Length: 301
Image 1 (cartoon, helix red, strand yellow):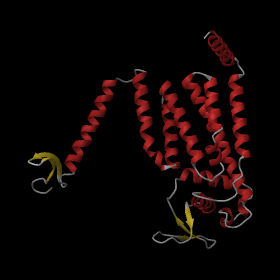
Image 2: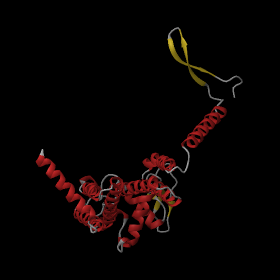
Image 3: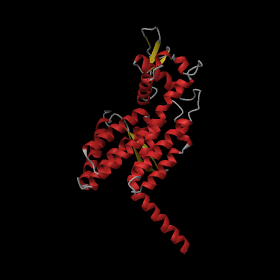
Image 4: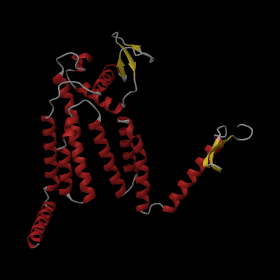
């Protein structure tokens, strides 16, 4: 027991010494950034196109070339248009526009984009493997920033730079994230936006102001446009803002409960008034037990 106690005290003193060092605030983020960027960059070895890349690549390419989120060709049941160069495109809303805009911007900045055809970009013609690998460097940069955000987030919550470094190091070592950065898909961008939104929530919790709330709203909106499944998370900033206002005594808890109850009652009353044409369903007891019964309002509507 004495040996364990001594070891524990030495580890605690070592951690305290690391925390108190001025170079820690710069050394840890630098190590994480270099480790993540070099590691992910060295793992870019996927040369083929697979999965959802088959839909993201033409949508992003047509957005870059024609300024329209669209698929190439005439699709049945959808209205298509013919461009000046004779290519027929069909506007599509199958994917969120955030990553498509990033992919189009990456194509615009790449010096060889003018010489690359869509068929080559999609992997149907050989010769564009290195071009696709160049575009994936954007994912590597985004993943690096995501690791730095998880470091800042964990450090802010726990108050320990060592804990933040450990959490960020585990994230940077995740093979799933590294492999995902080797694809032209929005998962890395969505993870970055989600972590950035979480960081904004931490700032709001520490002290709500109009800048933090506005920034959080923008980030959550861009996240929802990146992957629509995150539309369900739009309720999070409202809950955090209200809880933070109550925590800092900027608003009374009773007032919040009163407003929520009032809005809920008004919503129920409005639906009750507007849906009188629909039969009402309620539970009643009969000789056979409890069951559902229907009745219509007198006079129809």
